[in-house]
Length: 247
Image 1 (cartoon, one colour):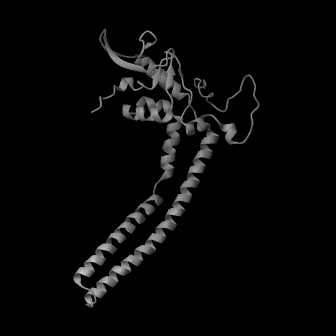
Image 2: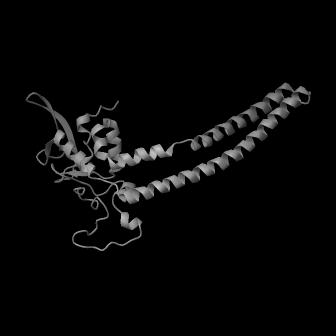
Image 3: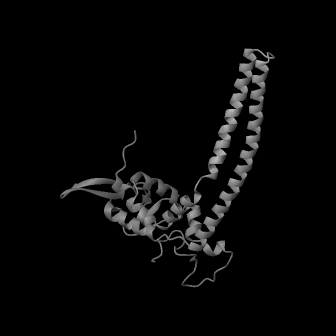
């Protein structure tokens, strides 16, 4: 059984030391008036030792700066809705084909019963056929039910929730349960996050979020002129490896 994670140290094992690159661990230390939580370098405590409360607040501020580019987000939403529509249409056609197969099986079951009552087959033969056709009918019903269920999935609500989450990560990391925060960290940041006691840096985000947060001009098929002020700036967030833009 795994040891429960201290909710005040949810960043433990996700952030690394800026000096040696080792993972930061965390622990509670007894001090004046109670226990205090700290993150520290797992290789050498002298490299970094910081109050978890301060580090967590800075992380919330860091992810609060990750604001989606609305143009890309709208395009992403439209693409998913189109895909959903195509999937629903394909599922309806498949369900209709399976319903025809189901009617054919049910007709066979009726014929088997008719033959038995007319004395053309024995009880054992009837049972054997009913078992076979019954299994086939149940399989088809389950497939049809699954396909029809997809028609009722409310993807709009799910998309609204996801878009709200993408645009409000700071609020999410303030209020979400610890285990959910940990899952989100693993999904958003494929590589470890560097923390020097004041600022957070990462080399990359989840590939889809990288697009949503940054690569607007590339998706629009436009080239942006480079200048000392805006070189490499594709949106509200700077290139991977930098802190979020000050909004």
